Amino acid sequence: MSDLLEIRRLRVSYHTMAGEIQAVRGVDLSVGENEVVAVVGESGCGKSVTARSILRLVRRPAGDIKSGSEILFRGENVLSFDKKRLRRYRGGECSIVFQDPLSALNPTMRSGRQIEENLRAHSGISAAAARAEAVELLRRVGFDDPARRARQYPHELSGGMRQRVMIAIAFSNRPSLLIADEPTTALDVTIQSRVLELLRELQVETRASIVLITHDLGVVAGIAKRIYVMYAGRIVESGSSEDIFYHTAHPYTKALLASVPRMTMQSKLPLPYIQGVPPELIDPPSGCAFAERCALCMDICRREEPKLTESNGRHSTACWFETLPGTDGGGLL
Ligand SMILES: Nc1ncnc2c1ncn2[C@@H]1O[C@H](COP(=O)(O)OP(=O)(O)OP(=O)(O)O)[C@@H](O)[C@H]1O
Ligand SMILES: [Mg+2]
Image 1 (cartoon, rainbow, N blue to C red):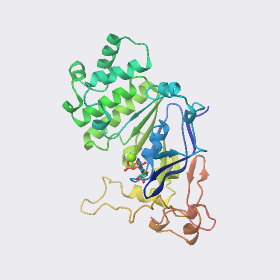
Image 2: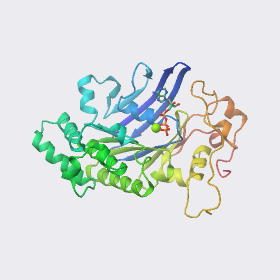
Image 3: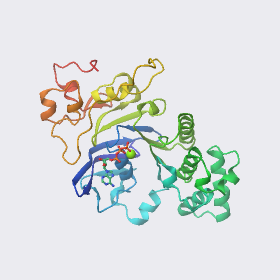
Image 4: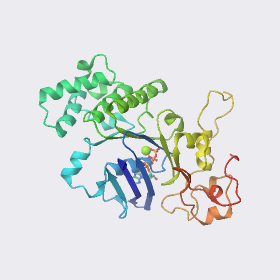
């Protein structure tokens, strides 16, 4: 079975006064039908730029999806869609939920109307039917009084409620693919888990695929079937959730995991964090981008970029320590 979404060799740059920021530096990523995939990594590693590229929301002239990049949706190249095809794709077949619903929603339009507009943009549904469907969608995302909520403006809703409205808009046309870019980061912890549960329920119900983007590995544990770990514009490890959590290969993934709070931790000890900072993407290093922060760094790591190499099944890692014969992968961090 071919994948729903296949990204090949994606490279995206931003042209700035300071120079060309190589935000995404050759990402390969695939999402199957009815699959939840997570993309995890620290701030600035290129997660949102990847997400925006999938929907072709990287704005020229500053943003530049480099030639040679491919984004295939059911085998069709998204990067060569004409305007009409792109309109059908965005918000119809593929939609996105952003971290900050307040800036993503239209502040001058009632929440119900925003759902209706998306419905009507993608089908010949009547105004009355769209209104009824919008209320039904608000009920489905957890509002007890959906008709009243439909008449409210975004500023009249709490952060969690606004995120539910965003999710209702995103699911309104039953997309095959939903990109959720840090959908819970702006919410407090209890609301976070309810919003994640809702996403999961809707995913099961509509059989959509989800790309869940987050900087927090703890968030994806129970949801994602496969995980891509990103660092400095590249994928450094990918595999099933089990591979990533229990057979962690890359030192960066190990460090990310160590910084996830656990129930068993002693509360007085500070949470470990990853020392140092990611490299500048205007002038990325020629070797491994994580080398300067890695406890296992060897000479070759600073000289040559390790390739993403498959170790077993679909578990891949880009680390010299893991792939060179004679080195004993893992265990030290
Ligand atoms: N519009 C832009 N103009 C210039 N540089 C940009 C722009 N958008 C992103 N970048 C740069 O691209 C790199 C990747 O940014 P991106 O937003 O994808 O990070 P991220 O992984 O989503 O981080 P976060 O967790 O903070 O959301 C960063 O170095 C960022 O500064
Ligand atoms: Mg982001």
